[in-house]
Length: 234
Image 1 (cartoon, rainbow, N blue to C red):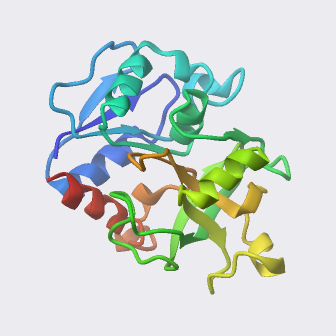
Image 2: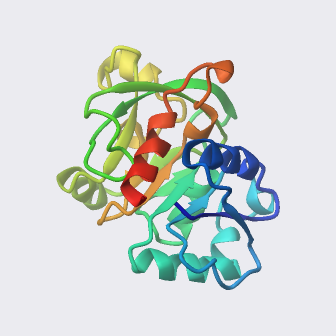
């Protein structure tokens, strides 16, 4: 699998992502600077990693979404090349129109950092094919603007078309009720942690599965996400 990790000024999770991609696929990804206008030929997967692109000025991801490389990312996405957008990458993808919705300041206006539980909403995507629908996994988060929001019509489409990838949940998988809301770290509407585009070839996800792939880091629940991608693309 030939992957490319897009690098913006201020991004700080690109090496974590590159290490995980090599660990799982056995192949070193290309690191593509934001000022480039092309991605490597034959790229099978584009990854927009987490961090603080452009210092999170203006709106998180808004400046990065206008970078030269994003025109090429959108072009490749339109051609069906999968795009995985994590944390700040999710914000960038939303600003660029690659996935629906927006990411706002956390409900309590505080940076959150720690492990969260996620409920897998579907296994019917190249990103989630190694999970079971309803499965609960644990991965870390680290963000101040992860509060996902979409209008009622968009939410209905997401629900109807199976475009919700993951939701924040309690350890027992509860999403609704007090325990489910307590498990929501940022106030995201309907506890949404990750969404797909209409064809499920682009996924935006706020938590960091790339930091949950080795036991020494507290768990391996994120590894199956990358294993599934490699299996689907090789």
